[in-house]
Structure formats: C-alpha cells, structure tokens
Image 1 (spheres, rainbow, N blue to C red):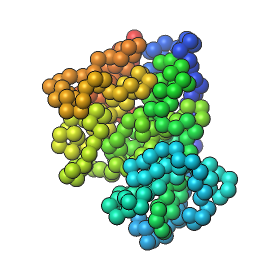
Image 2 (image 1 turned 45 degrees about the vertical axis):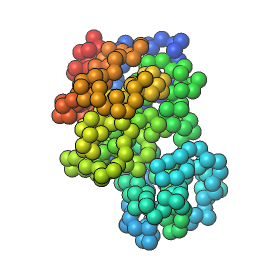
Image 3 (image 1 turned 90 degrees about the horizontal axis):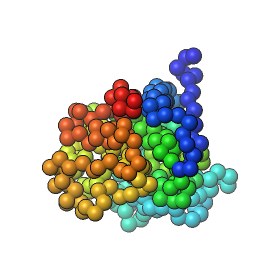
Length: 327
C-alpha cells in the first residue's frame, strides 16, 4: 500500500481496573512499538489552507469573522487568557482560546506565534486549529473541542481512576506519537504535562497548549526571566534555559508518572527549590505503585542526566531494551 494511503487506527476501548488485559506486558510493549512507528510514518495533509502571513494586520485564509463564533461557558484558562466552549457558524462545537485585553500589548506576538505554530502542525494526536480571529481585540484561536477536558482532570475523575494499566499505557502511546511528530518537524513543546493534554470521545488524547512551542534546529535558549514548571522541566532547561527535544523527553518521563498515578503531582512533598537540588544531585522518583518494570525503565531513560543518552520519542517506545525488560 502506498504510504500516502496508509491509515492507522488505535483501539482506545476503556479497560477498567476490574478487567484483565487479554495480552501480556511483552505483547503490549510490542504493540505500542508497532502503532507508534506506523503513526509517525503517516504523511498527513493539512486540514486547512496554508497561511500567508503572521501579522494580525494581514488577512490569511484561516481568518473568519468574529460574528460567526458565539462564546458559551468558560471551560479553562490558557497562557494568555480564557478558554471557552463555543459554537461556530451555528452548528459546530469548538474551543476558543482568547487573548485578554490586559495581555494584549505584552503578549500579542506570542499569541500570534502560537497560532502560526498550530497552522503548521497536523497530526492525529495534536489539537487541530480550525480558524483565527485576529483583526480586532480580543483575538481568538478556534480549535477542536475535546469533550473530556484536560488529561490531568480526566485522570483524577472517577472515569479516569477506573482505567487499568493497559488503558493508561495506551494514553502514553498517543502522547508519544504526537511528540514524535513534533520531533520530526523540529519543534520543541517546552511544557509537556498532563494539564496540557486533552481527552476526547473514546479517550483519544491530543497534545495542546503550544504557547511555548518553538521551532529549533538543535536547541532553543529561552529569553531572560522566562518562567518554567520546575517539576516537569529538565535540569539543563531549568538551570540554563536550554530547550531541546531531549528536554521534552525528560518532561514525557514526568508525564508518565502523572498517568500511572492518576494525576498525582510529581515529587510529592517536595518544593521546587528542593526538586532542583535533589535532581541535580542524582535523585530520581521511585517507581510508582503498580507501575510495570519496563515502563519505569523508560522513565529512568527519559531522566538521564546526559541529554544525549535520553531516547528520542520514537525510540522511547520501540527500543529493544523495553521489549527485553518486558520478558
């Protein structure tokens, strides 16, 4: 079959804690490898026209009239403003990220950069941008609506806490596939965490919040004074503001702990300054209760002090090391 026609479907049927998996840990890891490698090879066609400009005073093909969007209830808070459930053209449910008036002068360029980033990225496990409203304040980013909200809130809900390890690993697979695509496009996310992933029908998981994402060649150095979520941030990024795909991989390891602990805060009982000191001294979180050994091995690989020793996102779930650990 030609690559251009290749399609991969992930089974995301929920398995609760009371149900047994009908496949071994070894089979699970092998399946993860195959699904991830196929997903990362699928050439995706953009779902929207290619934009012709970034400046808010240049209309591109993504621009729609603000009157076509009706905001409903607020469902969250983004880096630059509120996020609303909304209706587009009277028929389509969407999510709308807004730029607060108080943030306009300081963050309009960053807000537009997020829109520009989303226009370029198209993958089944990344939140899809539908349209923008950037001709007058407040600016809107219109995206697909994920019905179950953030992955963090989902994991902490009764539905999320009923999932067994097989379903939790499938969540991790989906995130890894989206991140492998970002890696292939030379983008670094910089804020990968359960709070920035979203869950939809069938427990499909997609990565969102591209407010900090940047295109890189090797590494990206953040501007002076930038603030980072310390417990999710790699030491070289927290200490020297140096971001690479390897620092995203570190964050993925932290996200894995969030997934298998149903949304527990990383490094429980430790404050940020203590986390920085302890991690620099070699401390790594112990294996969470009930975590498969091969999954904890992956976490430790993601947390290697040597950036070059961390796996890529594709390697992280397709390595022979993982398959060996599962036997």
